[in-house]
Image 1 (cartoon, rainbow over the protein chains, first blue to last red):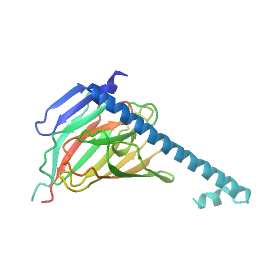
Image 2: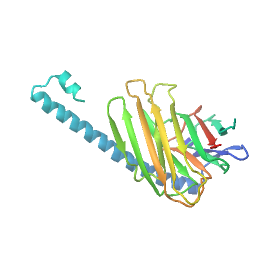
Image 3: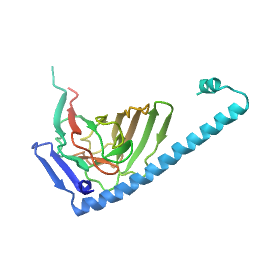
Image 4: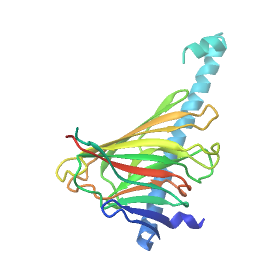
Length: 76
Length: 173
């Protein structure tokens, strides 16, 4: 995807708008930042999945105890 | 009555861009507010967006994000991210014409000797019972520099055409 290295710079003092390619240094930094973001995103996704699994497990145990789906929903 | 809420710069993208940079920010206000109405071309329903300050390669900050979904809630630390998390914005698989709205309040941006605290709120509506609100807070502890440039970046890929970014200056009096 070619547009991944495009930026628009808005000069807040002069009002000038410049669309430009990222510099090699900016691209290198972008790749570092993207990796850091991806790492955080993986942690976040794992936490979401763990929470969903724990919730499903808890609901299954409550159902095994005889609670109806409505009673389980009322506990949420 | 004093004009305390001033538009500094607003821009609507005419083509896809992988970042939007507000540079040479005037040092004449007390606080700043960034409004985004944007969407990304990342595959999937959403894409995280973050801010970078003064082009810093790394960020010394305390960060936290609260996530409130249509059912349930959660949190995220974003400990590795070199920026301030703004929120998850709609992406390629979201229904067409859904753009995420967000507002970030940047306090005390001119200070060169105190921490600066920023907060963001964003709302994603994917149209399939997948609406959620996200709030992020950040205390920028790098300390000694006034905020002079601000970059808005998607975690991957680009902002699409017609995404709009607006920076406002807030004066206390």
